Length: 115
Ligand SMILES: [Zn+2]
Image 1 (tube, rainbow, N blue to C red):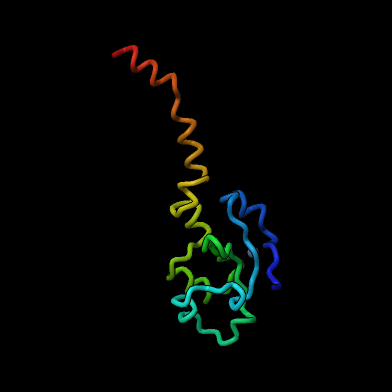
Image 2 (image 1 turned 135 degrees about the horizontal axis):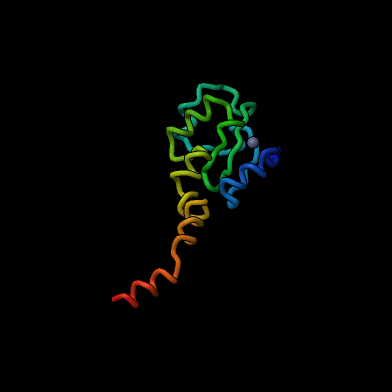
């Protein structure tokens, strides 16, 4: 294996701390067959991809454009999509944190007293 941690991992961790981005060649990343068939490159062992292979999230900034387009058409997530509207948004995304803050117990007490 030649996989190595993405140099931008601190930024990516801010999007979702559960994601671990590494750089692979397309051959190493073991992409889904439906995505591989869309990739025009012949030498998959030389094309680079930046992704969390377990969660099926890729970082388009560090991924070959052809590969990124193929993954976007598969069940993989663009990391920006993951953090805003994908599974990452409903788990540990910023939107969940703001919801927790808005649920204030004092509001519930006030409502029940009034009723
Ligand atoms: Zn990267």
